[in-house]
Image: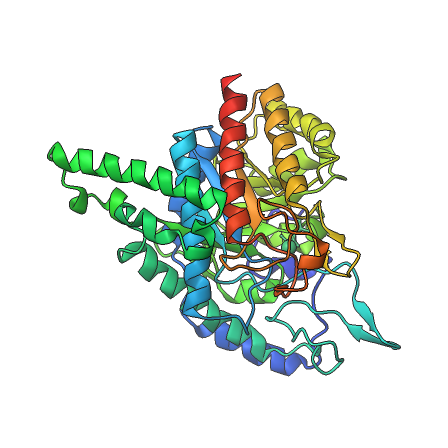
Length: 451
Ligand code: PEP
Ligand code: CO
């Protein structure tokens, strides 16, 4: 790998998963426009997140990374952003309260648009049409015209990200996320589930603790830890020309940051060591992630750590494993040993979604809640045996009452999937399933750590 790096050096490396834009001049115009726009995040924020992730790497904090598989241009409203945020805040409270460690909250939001696909074309009737690659590239309708890559969408994705991030900042800094509002995050359809009722009890305990603090003379209102939270943004850095357009040199340090989000990750399909995605992300100062699927070897993983984090900065690299419930323990343990022996300080996070996707009898892409729980269980057990910290979870969810994953306390089954199947890409946990998962995860980690 070449030693020198620039925001454009990825262009001379082999690259996968890029759309075939029909008109180079159109693409260029859109990218120039974005390159002239303000950054979405600030380098100092990315460094704060990295400092928090360093605490996760050290075993003193936990990472909750969650949001849509793919954000949609159509489902874009204050309501959907607020419901997603509520569920993330609820899950974080459950994890913090039960595990007794800070939880770093990172959304798959405000930029999670581009999707890697396993094939370039899809058969619709007798025709072959280009696949849907996320609303930042094309439309999801099943026609060749809808699937035409349109550079104007890059600009729209930028604006939607900016508006989403603006609302997230308003909610998290403007009082919505204050701890004395824990009850208000329990939206109705979640509150009526068993996990929702458990959550209500926990919220009452928090209330009592806040009252107690106030009674002892502590000024809760003046304490920003009780009134504001940090919710960071992240997405898969897939469309490198878009990422390049938002990569800026930080005036305080001189380093380059990809200012499209606080954290960026490399997907399972684009993690070749000699490929463009590793080349691009090795040079930006943001904390980065990399998906780690079942074909990853210990040797390859160490080379990856060396490539993207040669200075071994804690919090810089999060390894997001996505093995599938049947593979997780056997595949993960040798990787944990290899990374531990190498001395690389990484965050280990479990994505229990992408290795457990299948097509239901009715033709819906789905996931079973019990496989998702099962993969987290295997992840936690493997870490326990190897003496490493199961640092976090990476989840696809929505706050809404969708029916995309089967199982959970409502025991959703295949035939329920039709009623509210709304995702534009992979199936997401709904609000009730997400909260239940937070309780189950916290219990698993607590009981394993205690044993
Ligand atoms: C994703 O996170 O939506 C995704 C495509 O995952 P992976 O790269 O692990 O397949
Ligand atoms: Co997905």
